[in-house]
Image (cartoon, rainbow, N blue to C red; front, side):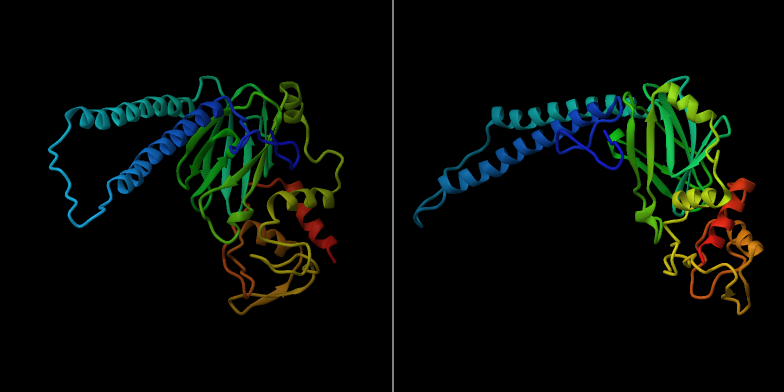
Length: 314
């Protein structure tokens, strides 16, 4: 499993992090081996007969052959049996993946350009990092605030689109504690490759403790802002003057900002807040209007933390 940033796998497949990962791998291996054997028989047979029965002289003539009922039955029936085995096996694995067990622990997953937010029934929120108890079925309810994203966990062998305007769902049961990588596999714009997250599977007592604790306990506002920046802003902004999808934050506070509509103002606390809540209202000249609003997603402590963190980058 994943520990920190290192991963170890015993085969060419990713590690098996969920209860149904082994079933998916077994089906995949069967398909690969069956395809290799079929390829060897068909292509190998073609090469063998092309060499064995190649024309040696201009007088060579192939004998007239009508058909062989036994051979025709075998090459039709054997693939049919293999296809039916694959169908039944695939349907069984599909049901394992798609049917959510009753009483599963629910977590809401919200995608937006370009990060993942996780919302728990207790009211606890996290961004870029999901926490879940080990050995329990976890139901993910997915949605999107902007475009279609796709929540993919290779170690769990599961993937589901997050679609704006509707809810989709997926589930997993990770029996062992560890950290697992999440990717977005639906191209969603410039920051698509940076739309990453981690799933931290914890022992149940550790998870319950995490669920109760304040994530910003003992932090000052600058530290709160740094934590939020690292989880939600790095795909589009830098802490230097380097411009990415959006402008760099270093030296931004108190600096004159020129906007696409020809207006300008000095970047103060109100400007930073407005840029987070209503980013389309003042688009900086030279940049596209692609930022998603954080309205209703951040607590007052988090908003103030971001402001103080940007102010500290002078």
